[in-house]
Image (cartoon, rainbow, N blue to C red; front, side):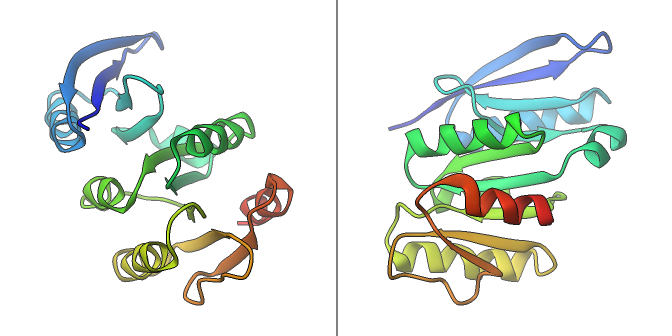
Length: 175
């Protein structure tokens, strides 16, 4: 299933202007990069259905310093939307995607992130592959793995049992 994405520019007065709508994450990422070359204004791409921001460019330095930037890889859309919403309501800047392939597409151009969160709703091997890839591409950024019971990802910096946000939000706040 190909998802629809919208590309926006944040105007100097703070309002957003929709620039384009595209099918597929790769086209959204490419379109966002092209827009960012044409303007110094902040730009972002969002999933047209869930409204989840999946990529940002030209984020002002002051905005970057105010909020920790978290990249969240979910494996269940509903949980991904809920977690991202919870993080945003706690004041964090969040990019959230579903699955390893989408994450790798967006992370192919190195950007600054303060923390990666890897969701629990995928097979251990899928999650382990993502953690190992993140460690290779972003060796200085910490990784928080949300785990089902009886499973840990040894290469993640933090492992938390996924049964509520209380424990993992405490780790996010400490980073």
